[in-house]
Length: 137
Image (cartoon, rainbow, N blue to C red; front, side):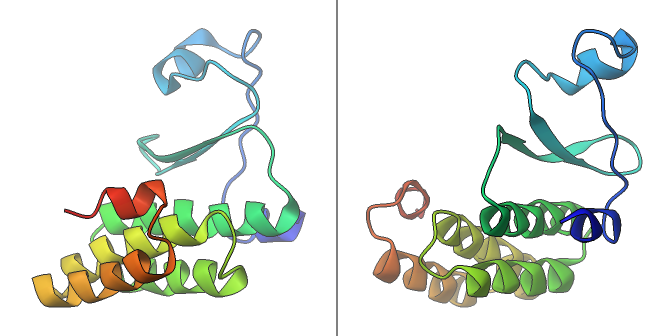
C-alpha cells in the first residue's frame, strides 16, 4: 500500500490541532483521517473521509488522481485511471462514481455529448439506484 501511494503522490501528514494553522485551515479539514488529493499549488481536487479497505482505497486513489488530471486538462490520463478504478472492483461501492467521472472526462476529451451519454448510459444500466446515476441530467 505504501508503494501505491509514494509512487504516485507526495504524502503529507498533518495533525489537525498541532500542524501550522496556516496550512491546515485553508484545507477545510474537520475530520480525521481525511485524504486530500491536491496539486502543487495545494488546490484540492478530491477529498475522502475516514478509512477504506485496501482495494477500495486503491480505487479511491485512482479516482482522486483522475480528478487532478481532469482539472489539469489531461482527460486521457483521467479516463485511463477511471477505467482502472472500475475494473479493479466492477461491482464495488466506488464503481458508479468512477463511471460518472469517466463520462465527464470523456466529454472533456471529445466535446461530444453522445460519447459522454454512452458512458453515462452504462452507469444508468449497471447502477440505476446509485447517487451517481441520479446526477445524470
